[in-house]
Image 1 (cartoon, rainbow, N blue to C red):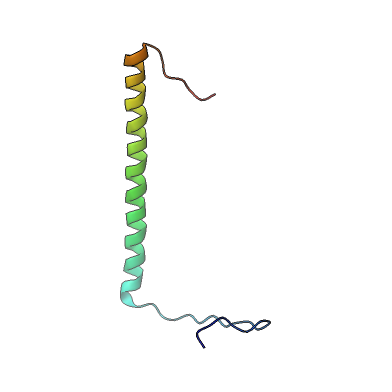
Image 2: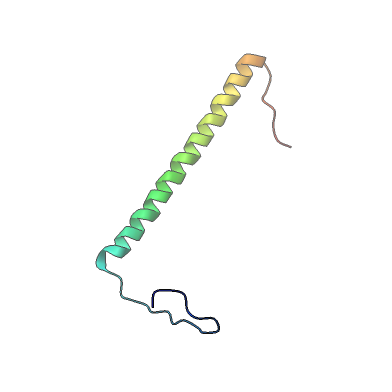
Length: 67
């Protein structure tokens, strides 16, 4: 019963009512992913700014840029 359906036979999808905590769990995952992405973006911007400053101090030139 728990395995895949036999070849050539369509399986029926059953929608069950979600438990009350399920929606909250999904919201928490979305919030966590947003927070994680935000910290990643801030860390990336900070690292680029720090690397550019160090490059200017070390070489006296502007850092190379993508063209």
